Image (cartoon, rainbow, N blue to C red; front, side, top):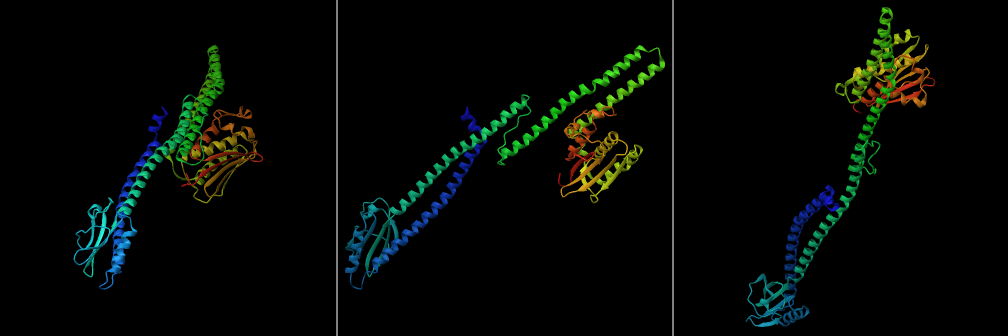
Length: 455
């Protein structure tokens, strides 16, 4: 089973393919190198034969063959039979010295078999024939050394090819085993996730290879999936908990209307209350649907370049009078230079700042001062809405982004607990980090929007 899986694994096949490619390249390069080496060795033996011939011929003195005969006999005695060939013939064709029998050769270089010269070797002999004052001098050298070099090179080449194949197979198996283990960990994680365990994550080694990159992206996707599923569970629980009360009130109102149907004024008042309760329930479901659509990416297609200063300025202009009517004060402090260009949806961003301002106006007492600030950093724009009201306890600052979550002190005020959930969804859609900080006193909500080109 493991062997079959190993043979099917991509790293093993890549290693074998690379090994085959390397062998083909080695064959081509080796063939070229072998041809060049063979040519150079042939030239080298020709030079060697020519040099030896020149040295022997230089021992001849005019009308004195004794030195030449002695030189030929000396060279013949120094070399083993079949390795080098020497022959000296006089002007009448008689053999004067040497280790080969008389033969007919053309002047110059030629190649003959050792047997034709009466030598015991099997390797061909490279022969140089020339005249020395009417005498014929034969000097020959065997191809034994050059053939041995060629055989060594060829054997080395074959051994190297075999070693490469073995290394490719073993290395491919090791790489495949290593990669297979990591892929098996991914497989096990995905099986657990498909079984409902969304907390599982793929192990990451941190070496930055391709499997680590894929695993990191998959972990991010699993984290988002886990968050969405948990959000759905939380929404379901919150709907069951928070909408149970208004539905019960609606049912009780209808029952009272049925019981008092003879009293016209009383029934009309109860029906109006029932309609208001239905409107609140409908608004809650509408807000939940809008949040879900935004979290799914709806509105991303409407993104276009816009000026964050203009968005915040228009919201501040509208709600400045609303705050005054509520005995509060709203100020705008735009520190970022114009234009504060980002990519986004104008309508959604307006809704984001409206929700934050309305939230502050609703939950802060008279005399509260609210400030909208926009500053610029190298990579982003920092938009903050701060107030000096009661603030939010630190332990509840992350909880307020949950759907339908309301602070205990806010349950008597109008609302459905979805304002900040919508703010969080819009911020996430625009890749803006949102944080709740202590305003000392009060609350400061900060959003970091990436500048155009940094998204």
